[in-house]
Image 1: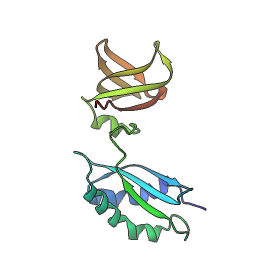
Image 2: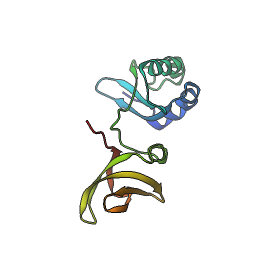
Image 3: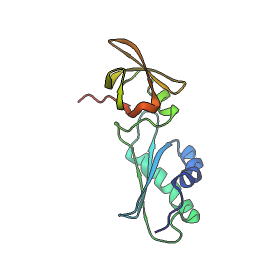
Image 4: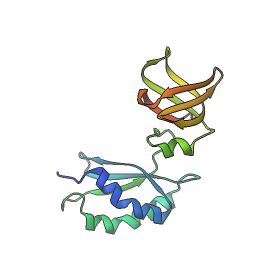
Length: 151
């Protein structure tokens, strides 16, 4: 099944996201289930009513865009979850002052795992404050940066 590029779909949906007051943080096409999932978030967290409002706002416009070139598909709108990876500068800026965990592809300065308070994201670096002081980790070395969820 042929599908339009995800970046094109997200760009098309952006004005609808702004209208509803949400941010599109990711989108994914699942070939097996023939479903398009748009992951959204908003300041203060997301609730089911907002997901439904966004779904209703994009349903008809997506039919006009025709992302699957006429083939049937399922549209899902979802929260990315608390432990979603940070992908954009906006993700980092939104979580300044919060505790995060950083997992690396390979050891950096002898470690593959860091945790601490996110102080900044500048010049392509994740800046943490930990018990060892300020640690600067190049984002390119990060496999995953996300909130440190304590249960």
